[in-house]
Length: 352
Image 1 (cartoon, rainbow, N blue to C red):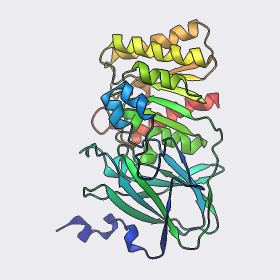
Image 2: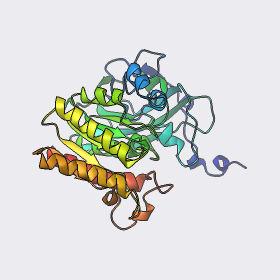
Image 3: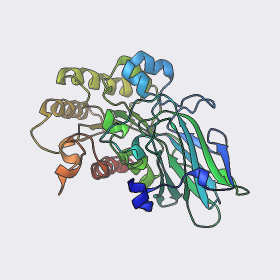
Image 4: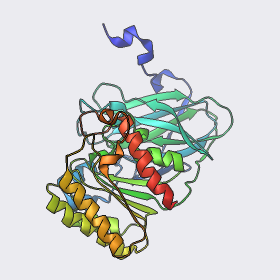
């Protein structure tokens, strides 16, 4: 017997079950896409220009199509919202990562005091890469929404369904047009959040109404020259260097992390810059790389940099239940991401 036959609450409502849905291309106004290059209909969205990703590494070239940090903002008076998604390149599913996070989407209601969670659009358990889901959002009148896109899947087609005859307008504007830029590993990309809105960057964005760019590349954040030059050429509000876990050695991290800081500083002398070492559930590990990041921060301060800060990864999961903050001893669960969001968001808040 199937669990969905036993417990009906486990079964999501598919958009095909709802009559009167009108589907609209999320790439077209008044929808506005953030965090990814949307491309044209039928093309896969990307987080980096394809030529930059390919010049960086094979891993980054593949993960570039994952829509981690991608968002759609809009306003409508529809009583329900549906999502139709066609995935592109398939990287496979993981047994410690909920499909609702890796391949699904979630919806937030936006307001003057931040954004709050409303619904999860679940991709289903079968293969094929095409799914639809619908959620009742309640309320009346025009309301503003943010749709967070999958963390570990490519998106080729994205349509948003509304009730026929309802209005559609532009979404809420972010507090600043310049995004916070995050560079790092699989943890930065969002593995293994239960849904996209539970990545630490998404939580900070929801609390502070901040745009952001997620440049986390699972197993592939190694500070190659091509991606460092690209990031140095961006114009962020704040830069977060969450780059530690993927370094093959402390020596490699020291060389590339220093190069990243120096390249960004050469283009942006006063940009707020946050060093973060890898989050840990126990003491006495990764001492070498932690010390590298701490040392680079100390050197920056000694050189007179007044717009730099540091967060020790050993403190990111601090408090009761520190050992409960991951799914596998490394990748955060939702509790771990929440604590990261509080710590990193607190540091960002001081600059705001």
